[in-house]
Amino acid sequence: MPGSEECWPPTYIATVEYGREEFAENELGDSLFPLDPGISICRTSYGGVLLVRTAVTDEELVVRTLSTASPSSLRRLLKVIFCCNTGTLEQCINANLGRFLTQPIRALRVSRRSGIARKLIDHVLTKELCVVAGGDSGSVLSVEPLGSEVCFTYQVFTKRSHR
Image 1 (cartoon, rainbow, N blue to C red):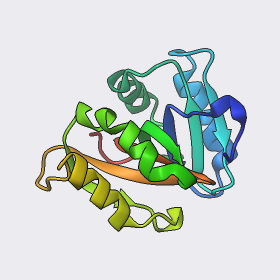
Image 2: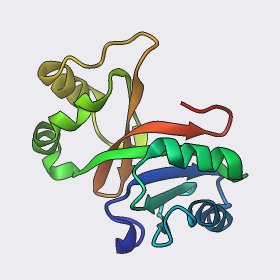
Image 3: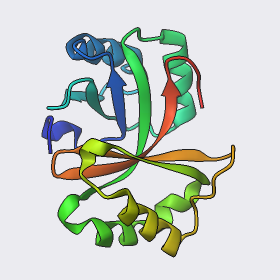
Image 4: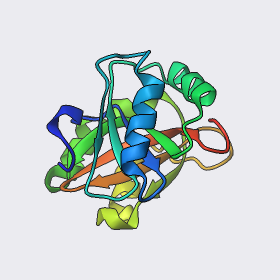
């Protein structure tokens, strides 16, 4: 797992302006510290990607706080549903299927750098849940690579707009 152990497993994954990870780490920490003084924010081996571990799971509160603080280097904030080791991916997805049912999923986004075949994820999710429905409602499920792990996430904040 890239980044510090103090951030694993992450609650959120933040994508930030490439090359400004240290600044973004401080800026994001300053914004969210009043909500959780025990927050941990860690850089990863991927440029522009930070892990956030916090006790604050109320994403609406996080979004309101970030909207007010408006960290300049933050691009997207993704809520982590769960993470899996790539070696046991299919079993891990099957073990965590119930976590996908918390909200409708309208689309699936699999990062090319994850090395995970989109067809595998599509197959497991549609076979087991039939959740990737399309349309305008629901979240975009993203599969984000983090070394030998991949995290299943959905976007809660973007620089331009909010979910």
